[in-house]
Structures are given as C-alpha cells and as structure tokens.
Amino acid sequence: MASRRTGRVRHPAVLLVLTVVALLTNALQSFGWQGGEYAYSFIWIALGSALAGLVVLVAAPAPWRSAGKDMAIAGTAGVVVVITLVVAFIWAWSSSSG
Image (cartoon, rainbow, N blue to C red; front, top):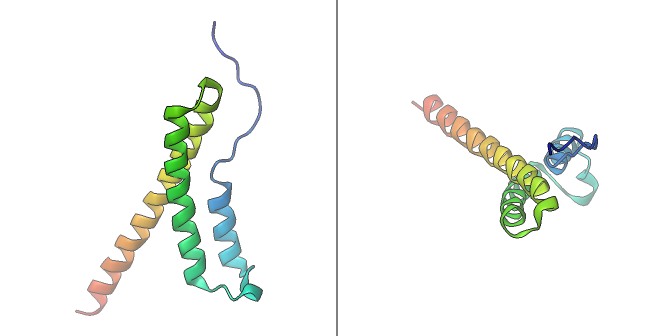
C-alpha cells in the first residue's frame, strides 16, 4: 500500500535560517554578539543537525526516520555552505595578496 503525504510541513533547516536572519538584523547585539558568534552558532547547528539526523535515521523507529533524514539533509547542506564560504574566503584572500 502506497503511503500518502500527510500534508504537514517540516522545516529542519529553520535554525540555520533563523541564525542567518539574526545575523542580518543584528538581533542579539544587546547580548554582545558580533559576526563570529553567529558563525560559530551556524557551524554548530549544522554539525549537530547532521549528526543528530544520522543517529535518528539509524537508531529510531520507522516513523522518526523521515525526520532524521530531513535533519541529516539540512545539516549536510549547512556544512556544505560553511565549506563553500571558507573556500571562497581563502581563494579571495590568496588572490588579493598576490
């Protein structure tokens, strides 16, 4: 029997998006946050989401596996964004100093 979509919307990347929005609006400036704190938060959320998603995907019962898959995908996408930004920064820095 084919499964039907339940119609609910899952947003596993919401913490990553909220971190970027907080950076762009400087939402946590009153707590002394600057760009570095947002960057560290984004990296840890991406790594944690990827790791937790893989654990849930492997160890959880069947109804939770799709949530684990979504978390793993969102975390992996976040890690790819971080790696891309680091590579772009290194490339720009190395080409500007020569």
